[in-house]
Length: 173
Image (cartoon, rainbow, N blue to C red; front, side):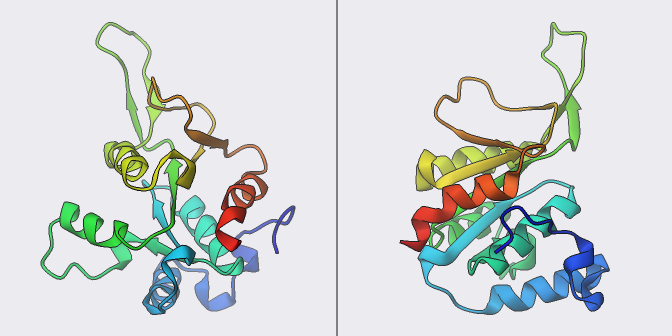
């Protein structure tokens, strides 16, 4: 259990310290079958560090994380691939990280934003799984979609590991 602990590259086996080795190791775990109640989809942008930390935490807690780019394409479009994998997951974790910048037309200040695909997949997953089965970890100062009451947002600067595990507790019962 890593509640209150630190999950970082130092805790990974030596052969997983490079991104390439991490991806190979992650793909091996994703091939293992698990009950749908244990599968958790991770939506991410370009912040590989947080993606790997969430992945490692989920593995350590007995879940089967699913990351789209590690799955076979099978000739599917991205939306077909999403639909296929969204059908057998119980929960989703969406990572709002500072990958893009943007502003409203009449604003003068640019703000950090998640990738557009992250925001789209977040909404799609809420419609598929329900608000209570989707949590977003939000990096400090990253804009989140407006008019989204009832959405679970977890600040990355807080103890996001503890707060995420608290949300996932219902899957273990």
